[in-house]
Length: 297
View 1 (cartoon, rainbow, N blue to C red):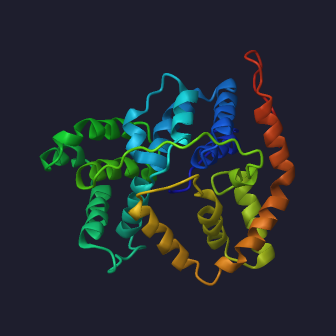
View 2: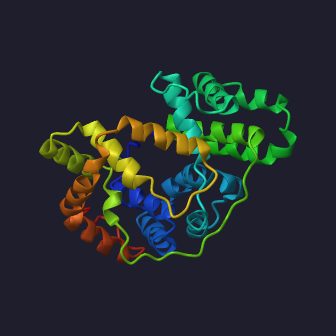
View 3: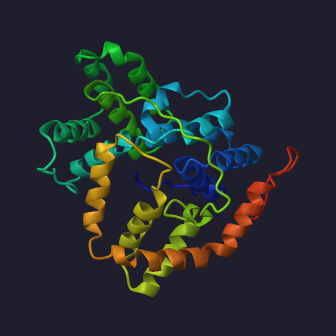
């Protein structure tokens, strides 16, 4: 996705951690982070982000998401076997529309047609929801498509909105796979350092420092970190567009992947002290009468 500007909130690290916990299926940590963000008054963000995370992590469950019980809903997504096909299609189409991605001739015509079509939608999305009503299969998927259209209003960024369009397209042109549930995970060794990524000011600072030390391009290192650590899921199935996206990104980083263990070790070392404070913070949320004015670091 496009970089998310979390500067409007001082809870950007907790927000980043939440998505990593959901993505990796850690139900206990997901509950803990949601509870913390609720305790500091971040409910509006949690409501809007819930739908974005659902479409990004497991789009087939997104039409079942409600906002009555935020803890329950976030845990519900965490418990799914992930399906990131809407995210993969949105990313490929967005990059294709900007001439960053070239169609893969080894893929099927239908596969590439999806990228071409969505790229056109992203350039001119105004009539998409009306046009899609004329497609065969619309009525069978109507409720799912309406849910995606409603969720669009909660998305703040172009890359997030693109997933809702992608979900609308996939609902008609692809067989929607069933939602699969995993056993709850509670990882006592959760890698909290993955929260300090390109979505946080602190993460950007650390990655810039590491890039300078290693003599690497910052944007390449940032992408390496995201695709080696940030997108890791508990389990993922039926995501051909996502698989193609990962394959494309890996080809871009060819010759650099062998440096990932070195980069990972440096990130862990540089963020350890802040990660320890993060763990303490989410484990001891402020009381209701607390103003939440805690130091992030």
